[in-house]
Image 1 (cartoon, rainbow, N blue to C red):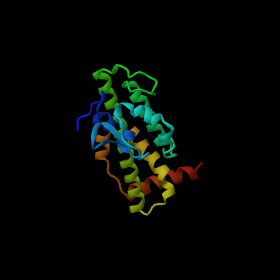
Image 2 (cartoon, rainbow, N blue to C red):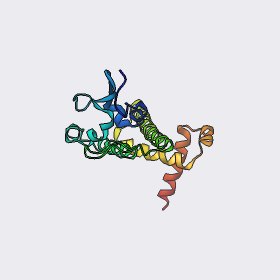
Image 3 (cartoon, helix red, strand yellow):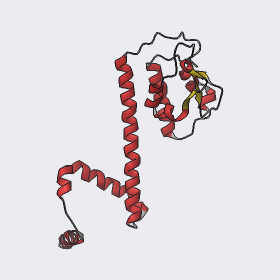
Image 4 (cartoon, rainbow, N blue to C red):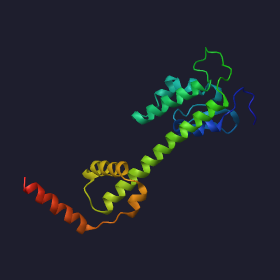
Length: 183
């Protein structure tokens, strides 16, 4: 059904925000309304999305973790920048965002999503390495610091050419041990 409302549901805005993508869906009966998965309330006008996100009804359902709170605040800020009404007393503003602002918003959200994806993949690889090599989980922080040090100090092309084995490590360990004993 086509909505009679001034601002139809905009999938690009929803998909560009990790928070909105996770918690906001389109009403199957009216494309001018959204449904919030956190609040499980009746469908609301898409143009009132910012009002809903700021409401006590919504905020009391927010998970307590800081990451979700940060993503919630970012979604509110971006919706404000895109000209959504922040309260029922505000007049619906003329859409102040230009095409460029909207594209910038979408790009910034995709970058945030990309960074989060990279972190999840990296953490998984570290956990996999620790488990496959029967290393203590307590080494995780040191392993991540080591990986960052390698990434910051060596070019990826050079790393592809590097070889090493336990004999190389043993040679360095003996040389370092000898140097420390002579002090």
